[in-house]
Amino acid sequence: MDIQQIGGRDRLAGPAPLQEYTENDQVFPAGMWRWRVQGDTMILERATATDWSTLTEAFKVSNAGAITLIKNLRFPTSDDSGAVANEVSLGGYDIDSTHRCLSISSEEAVAAETVAADRTLRVRINGATYKMNLRAV
Image (cartoon, rainbow, N blue to C red; front, side, top):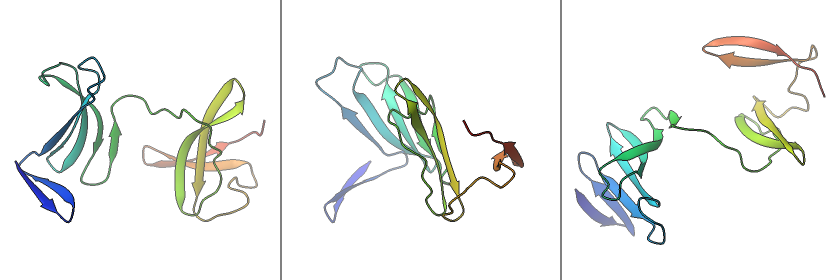
């Protein structure tokens, strides 16, 4: 693998470049992570052995932009799903001090109301469009 300094940046070049990170205030293998590029996919891996011999994938970004999370997607803070033009977002929203719910925002353009007059919301599941009936609580 070649490492080049270009404009203050490090460029790693090779058939499968990787960069390892070791957090030295942890008991290994905790704190041992690496980024790897292979097959035009960027992969974040966590070491499960102190000698890097076994790793677990945590995150991938494909050349088409698809993001794969290997485990859970978590929303540790509350974030209201306010309307933002041309954006779809997921988050967590604290409905009270002991309960958090899924927060979904879907806007083609900023509007005062995203729910149709018949109280339905369009969603795509496995390539089909559905109208979900909603009830305000």
